[in-house]
Length: 236
Image (cartoon, rainbow, N blue to C red; front, side, top):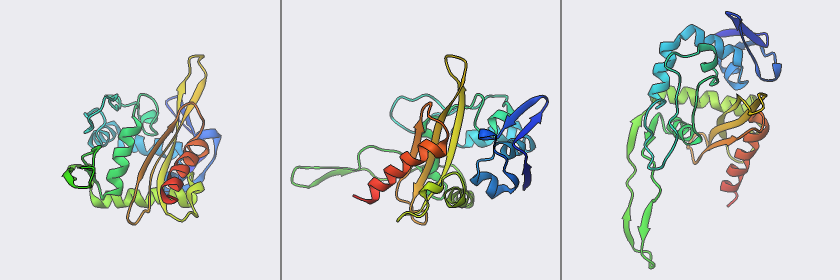
């Protein structure tokens, strides 16, 4: 894949700009992913077509029940995708931080999503184990090869893309930023700041999913929040 980002893409009188009007220039797929290039992924979505995007989204549990025992709003993509918007996670696409954490954990676990649970084990006051939860695989969301490809792409986000604030730490990290635009009550365009990722890339430790509502771009707000979580984990 190669693409020349000029800062925006227009098809059928509908224009998608890159965030902040940034012009990324000549890109391969890894660079487009690392730099979060809207126009490149809009073109990819148009090339793939709505049915392929819909199938992949549903493979990742969009429009489906999640394996968690708490109330939540179902993540969704439109039945007839607004291709250009859906390709960059905008438009009618809705997803929760929990759902993104589940997908990220599957990427970190060679494509397998484990059944989430709250309690690892129950012990008496003397430390005698009464019962423990046995980890079980809920579903294979993607192949190990696909998970490895996504891991490499997410590592490049930290190495040279929109998540570079996480580089140079005592731990390695891989992730993806997001800047989800929406219309506020006053009609102005506002932005939710997103970041999803995991630490210790070769042998993952923890997954973090951050949304900072109405806060700006993912790199400006959500990444620093994720960094504080990772730092707290490794410094304790």
